[in-house]
Length: 311
Image 1 (cartoon, rainbow, N blue to C red):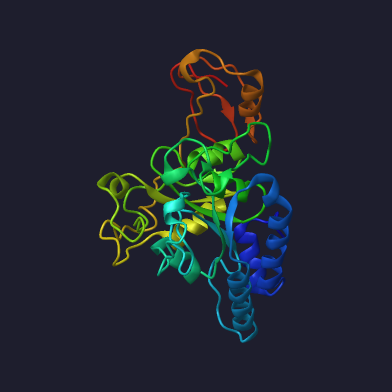
Image 2: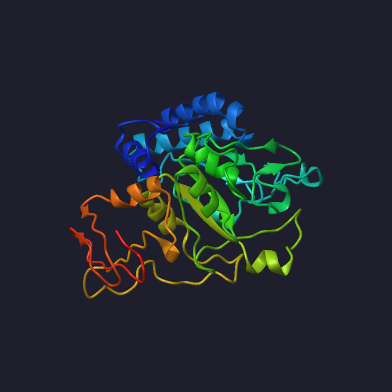
């Protein structure tokens, strides 16, 4: 089950095909196997996760409706509050700073019946492009091709990439969910400012202005489909965050098919042959050597190359 996507897990739990307890136990077993190798999860929430799963299973047995992320285990970055758990920011000063309440995105995921399974590692006070903290040490990339899963949400990225959680909740100001997605071969969403409500207090105190204006909480998952499901749950307003805006989930209907430009050679300086081969293998596309503004043959993808880009 730890290999399944979040939306697959939720569908199976809602239908009764599998139980939420089975999902959580599968992921706890995976954590026991993988976390000693990768050091992604810093605080286990096994007891509360089992209790939440049991509640979901009782509700399903009683015929009650379940949320869109029913039974989905998720990790939470060490700078986002989980009620009753220390929010350490990776440093000794805050090792005992227990959060009184869930941060808004954690509360929203819980309301959708997702289950927090642990805190995840980050660099000290989110400063650094890699994931290594004073309290918890270094997190390693599960793929092993490069040492680090990137930062600053590298703990969540490594947990999702290795199957310890189906979703990770991180935040991004300069690539902090996008970097772990790139390094881990997974997906992440850096939302528009104000799209998701959030609260980034540090030790119970208001954060500095830069910490209020720059970071945006966002999900990490193994598919864009899962990101969409998380987006629908996380978007909206919250009385704790006056910056969050009541924007609709979808914009107006588009007049026709989306046109996509694929730049296979940014800057025209060439790319590694393996990278180029991966771009050329896009399903439904016939690679052609395109010149400026020439259209490649691509079934179902009305597109054109731009500048010196080529297929």
